[in-house]
Length: 355
Ligand code: ATP
Picture 1 (tube, rainbow, N blue to C red):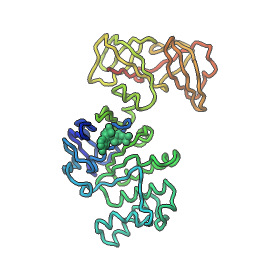
Picture 2: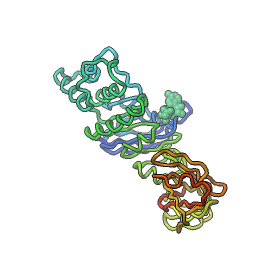
Picture 3: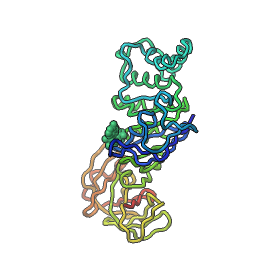
């Protein structure tokens, strides 16, 4: 197991800057996700780690070894990309053996290691098939075995599941986590899919325009986004403009057009001044509906539209001119459009974001 350390990494394409002086450490054995909107620099960062791009500035370390200028084949990474491109004329076993043959590994050892790799992705029974005799998910498992068989120092995955249908994606994502943990592999995984990242990552980095906006566990990033762009990118949220009334440590009281809220600072390292304009971010599932005015962080309104989804209902909750999204698990307030209701939220679920 090795840690991957990135120091002050800058990559330009002509005059365009794809990565701006990034610093990042992926811990040994960690399943780490790079997440962000299209064009934010995820693939450029992954390809720099793999050695396909040489950065203009900065350094990359695998453990204590600097690899910044090492060509890809000398970095010993395992890779799996969106198009898994197995050789169509070779059997599953021969596809997996390919990287070992290139490395001139003795035949008996190749046979043993291919067997182990196929076993680890539960594809032993398919060793003699050709890729066109496999389902998309099975082909993806073979691609994973091919990445693992070379005993890589780290695993680099770029949208590995985007060609699969929804059901297979779900199945394969937990499979990828299982394999990474079983092999104790340091893994960097690029995706657009926030559910994929939230469900299986140890930690994630959110990128935008070549900058890292936030690094943290799925829970940290979801519950305590530091910036509006992060809150907006991960999950659903409502933003309400407000003005700081008072501050005490990380706790802030904010006046907004829908009421007074006590919440927590998204980024405690840059507290706003009293009177400053801020944005209040509240996720729809954090509200609780009731018939009585709560002691604090409550708003009075009425259900406008509603969408019933079985286990939850999604309401447009109208408070004066403002529409808030409110999700109710095990819905009890459907059909109460003409009744005044109260929605309240715990202070730890109210995130105060500065500009
Ligand atoms: P996506 O999710 O759409 O794959 P991404 O986050 O992986 O996007 P990158 O592919 O890393 O983004 O691209 C980052 C920026 O660098 C983009 O503005 C892109 O247009 C630019 N870029 C990437 N590769 C090249 C290249 N070979 N030549 C010129 N510009 C490039």
